[in-house]
Amino acid sequence: MRRRLAVLLVALIAGACGNTPSGASDGGTARILIGNPTTFDPAIVGDAQSGAVINQFFEPLTSLDPSLELRPALAESWRMEEDGRRIVFHLRPNLRFSDGTPLRAADVVRSWLRVIDPKQPSPLATLLLDVRGARDYLAGQGSAGGVGMTADDAANEVVVDLLRPATDFPAIVAGSTFGVVPPGIDDSRGLQPGDAFVGSGGYRPVSADASSIVLAANPEYWAGRPALSNITLVTELGGMSPVAVFERGDLDYAPVSVFDATWIAYDQTLGPQLRETPSLSTDYYGFNVEIPPFDDERVRQAFGAAVDWRRIATLAVPNPAMIATSMVPPGIPGRSDRDAVPKHDPDAARALLADAGFPGGRGFPDVTLTTGGNDYDEAVVKELRRELGITVHPEVMDFDAYFERLDVDAPAMWFLSWVADYPGRNDFLGVLLGTGASNNYGNWTSAEFDAAITDAGAATGEAAASAAYDRAEDVVQRDVPVIPVSYGAGWALSREGLLGASENGLGGIRLADLGWRR
Image 1 (tube, helix red, strand yellow):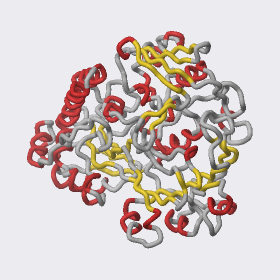
Image 2 (cartoon, rainbow, N blue to C red):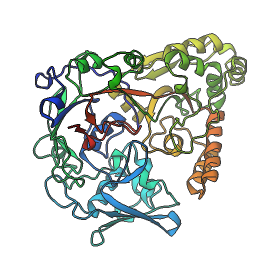
Image 3 (tube, helix red, strand yellow):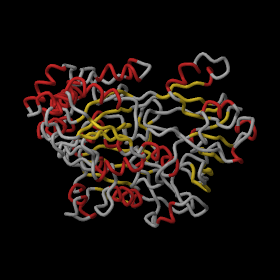
């Protein structure tokens, strides 16, 4: 899922400010700093920032705890049948939406079909394409009834038929995209904060303004009413530092930058409240292979070899562990330690560029590097000019416009930060680079890569799956459709006494787990 790299801006509303921690004042509320969501709709969400908010309103069948262990959520259990090609989820009894209406298996299927609706497919529709009939339905060549997702309301079960064994499917549907929504959600009024909002998660939004979203606990939540009766999600700080706002008692949980964390760790007051938050994410550059000259793999290879990617990452990140060695970040189960980043070799880069018809950079067309802003663009542009004799023009776009541009008309060269939707290597390989994948913004295609991903998905043992994913990463390193630069690292200030404020690396915290120590 795409990560928005915006800096949080804005003013706290007057009613959210004070000089004491909110939990200390009445024991039933908390103020959490979080990015401003672009949507409340699970079927539309494409960025981790919005997903972290949506997770609180619409519950999926499964969830991943802070140690990345898969846990039951709306489903109390699941089983594999037909050698892993069928998964049967058994729902908890007597599930209800926040308005008290029953939540049934049919609601799950209806919610998931929205993800592959051909009229408005989800940015993460690729995650369902292993379901029988899903690809045809998404392409407008089949019907919803032909999709291998069946609701058995009498048995309280959802049956999913797959094209291949996919033991990771229960983890895939733990993401915010698969939150279960009530009937009528397609009416935009059903997604507006207020008394009419109906959800399946621990909280529902009851009001919102330019700088905050106020949540109320859902008394119908399957795990019981959450401990905190209200939570204010603070979305903007008016240019103030999250550290300063936390210090004065106006926030109870606040993500902070890696650079702030380096000094906070030694601060006598703030240091004990600093928490490391895992971030299963990769920052990477990509090329649109349908736009010359990046349709020529020799040009992409030249770009890959000309820039010392490790050096520019070293200058921008404080921790060597954040320097990328492959598209798959540390913490993903089964990740290989092999180095799959293009080797820095300026001589080879110049030879490749000359072989592609641009000796010394002569005749190379104007190229714009379009991003949402990051710490690397300037160094990349300088090294390409110095080593290849070409000029790349950097362009920074507004974040929302930039993400829309990636979806509909990807630039020749671009940058993205991707947070895991689920802890699997395929989420950074097949989901991002597979032929026809909805997040393959560079439109790259490789039969060799696709075959390796297929073999990995069909593998019945960890060794065979790992070997297949290694082959896929070798193809990426050789053909250079993308170049990984760095991995994410997160830190947060968490008020002493606030329990349950632990992240799992996929973005955000589970608000239903929060409570104050008594």
